Every structure is written in C-alpha cells, then in structure tokens.
Image 1: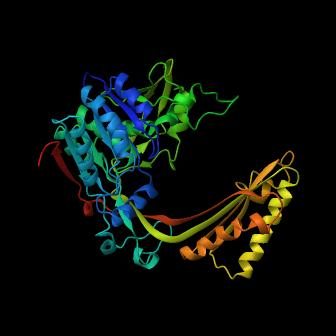
Image 2: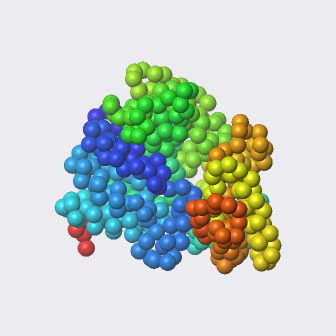
Length: 452
C-alpha cells in the first residue's frame, strides 16, 4: 500500500469484459491492487469440462489476452493483481502467467495460485442436501461434472503474505477478492465482523466493474449516462475504518453517483440484512451514500455478524442439449408468415417423431421475452420478425433435428424467409448445496517467473 488509503480498481466484472478500462486504471489510477472478477456459476462448470478434455486448460479463455496487456504496466506501477481467472485450473493459469511474464522480461515477478475450492473428490462422501430439491446429492443427480466451494478472503491472504505480484484463484466469492487486500493491508482481524461487513459492502459495489459507473444502469431520457462507449471502471479508496469512496478516472466515460451505488448495492442480493459470504454475514441495511464531488460517492455504515458455518458449493451437471433454429421474415404480413412458419415446424417435428423435453416457439420482437401476454397488444405490428424454435433434448441427434426443420423453411415454408441459422449447445446446469467449512482446505502455490 502506497499510503494510508488503500486504492483498489476493478479490471473486469465478468468473463467477457473489456480490457481497455483496466489498462487505463493501471496506467493512471494510482492503484495498489486491481481485481479481475471473471467467474460466474456456470462459467466454472464449463471450465471444468474444458479441463476434462485437456488437463492444461480450464482457466479463463481471456486470461492470456488480458495479462499480456496488463502485466507489464501493473509490474511497473507496483500494482498487485488478484483474479479468479484460474477458474477450474488455477495451477495451469499460474504457468500460463509465468510464460507471459517471461515474454515481457518480468523475471522477478512472483505468482501465486490459490487452490482447494474443487471439492468434487469429497462432495459425494459428504452427500449434502441440494438447495433446489431438498434431496440428498446422490438422490438428485446421477453424476456431475464439477463441484466448487466458494472460498473466502481468508484463502487469499496467505498468498499476499508471500509478496506475490499476481494471485490467481478458482472459485472465491466475488466480494472476497476485494476484501482480502483490505484485511491484509489494514491488519483486520478475521472475526471483526463490522469491518469485514464494511469491506464486503465495498467489494460488492466493485465486483461488477462498470455496473457502478453507469453500465446496466443507463436508460435514455430517465437515467442518462455519458460516454458508455468508453465506460470507465470503478476505483475504491478505502480507509482503515472500512469507509470508502467509489469513484472513476476523470475523463473516463460513465458516472458515479448515489443512484448507481444504490442500484449496485441491491444487485443480486436476497436479504439485505444478511448477505451471506464465506467471510461474514454482511448487513447492508445501515449503508449510507453521500455525493462528495463529481463522480465521488462516500460509502459508510456497513456492518456484519458472524460468518456462516457452511460454505456454498456450486455443482455442475449435464442436463442434455438445446437445439435451436432461427429464420427471419420482413415486410407486409411478416408476423403472419412467422406464425405460419412456426406451425409448419410443429407439424414437421410431429411427423418425423421428434422427441424433446421442452420446446419454445418465439417470434422475436413480438412474444420472445414476455410470451403471449404481449401478443397483439403492442402499438402496431413489427415490420420484421425472427422465428426462433428451441428445444431441450436428451441427445445431440435430437437437438440437431430442431434446427434442420427450421432451415428447411427456406424452400418449404412461407414466402420470403431468410437468414436461417441453426445451433446445438450442451446444457451444463447448476445446483447448490452447503457443506461444513471444515471439510474444505485451501492451499497456496507460489512460483517466481524463472523458477524451475
């Protein structure tokens, strides 16, 4: 930490996020840390699938791209990187990061991997109840492809204690990625629930990157946000008592105000008085926001109570396939031709004996999002529509049939169909469970760039 205030920037808020705002922060943000939060629940299950096919894979697909651009500037400016881009394979991500650092001549760089979140080897023995079904794991699922426990900030601190320049984790709770450097730099106790609660508030505000600087918030005419095309990512300036200021770089696109902070605070939470993380039961009900300058919001008043005795586990499993087909109709009578096309596909799937567990016929632009409730009640009919047929199937062959029948509408359906597309994707579904935290042990592996 360069002074009494800890400065953390967000480098990414999801797996596919932009990298330019992170580079801008690393160059001009006077940061101590930059955090790349890139792991959703299904993301890690899909990464586990890639690892099963290739033991050297399974980390974030943009890790190399991002680190190739950000490592040199972070190292030069003494900014430590924390990221969950390790996904299903933090150790392989460590080796890839060493390779990138070596390429840039960063020979003194130290890189740490946090492992232990993969509990697929013990989850069967624990056999917890699934949140979704209330049944035991072995009664609900025949097999699964991944099981990852949400680790907390406690798992990252040993990595920071080694002096690592880059810390790569797998499944760690999003706010914990930000809370860990606060605990480490300020020497907070792991049972000071108020401080951990306040730090979790800051982490939750920061974890989705551009969402607190106006992304996902903007609505023209109601909530205008300037410069979304070059949206800046947030900076948190945190004091030792847990209060913080959320801001962004001057000149970067977006806004930071009390409204953007309030919306982000309420994002993806159930009970604001009991936001459960591996570190603390955070209480958001006492949080206060105050605009103290342009794009500067003071955050005070968070709190917390004892952490939960269990850790959440996300369990990924195969749930079959989705077969899709799309085709467009435009001009006079587009809706009627689209509906006729859907009826033809229904008849054809019945005629060829297609089997599926669930099927949807959507006219995109008419009823694809809210279903029949919007049908015919909108102001005028659209000039163009796109028919989408999608079905869940047990086999890939059944899924392929869906798109094939849509494609044949070219010459066997209504007039003027065009732009047909068909696609098959594998379904990786997620269920959740809670297991005793004592059954999960994290560990840190640290290597220097040129270490053998």
